[in-house]
Image (tube, rainbow over all chains, first blue to last red; front, side, top):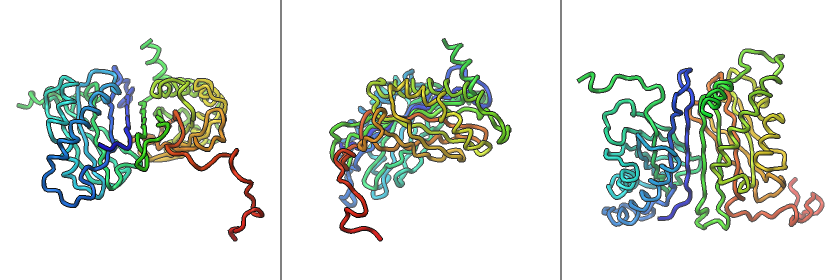
Length: 183
Length: 208
């Protein structure tokens, strides 16, 4: 895996809707900008060798890093694959939509649910929103949220940005009735 | 301690803090000799001068708010880069929302209440380079950095891109402190010590 750079973003919300957020709401993202393993090879039918070579490594790199950046236990999480203009979205999906990738984060965070994801192709500096849901029950409405990310010079046309996001809580000032009240 | 922090939050109208950090493991295909960690920390605060007009005296609020920001931002910058000793270059910036004046941004970063404290906390000596703008929320501002004790050190001229997706609102100001632990990935454009004397007369070909 050829990594160009690692980007970390941590946001801490202290006030929302004009009121103090009792426990500052933290969201962390760690992204690796890597060379697209299938770059320059034309249409590659079988993506499995590339997945086997890279998916676990990038998951193992990002999972502890995003939990370190959060500095608190994660309650919600999500992931992203943003493919440069010369690649296929399938290339990004290949790297993040396998257990080889996601299990590193699930184990590190004591999580059980599927990781919600954004997959997108775009130029360097493209804005993307990572969806996050609760780490053990994806129906917990208070934890549905998303986090906006932009890396000014990535992805290059032959690169992929792979990212993990973790939140220490649900939305700040969350106050929607739970799903169960409507069933 | 928590009580004190909450009080400070309210006293400066703090909405949120955003840390951005990157490290280049390779650049142009090769690992840098000295991989630099670079970071910016942004605080989104209420503009204390919204609606006050161009004749308003800014001194009282700048003396009250700017030192709190200097401490808050540099503490996080230092923590994210591994200590003030590690930091080699620095810069500062402010983005004011559309209901404010660029003078309001300047009031929070250009006076000793912010600049002197930031320099002291980051153990620097140089004048701190800066950028400012009046913008809609979500605009990008390019923050310049230069060496914290020898500003003309060319290898350390670099910039970091700062952006908060939902700030500044019209009545807010985003204040940013930024730093790097080293030079550009592959610095090789010389320095003042190695430059030849360049004048229009010494050049064989002079642009006309």
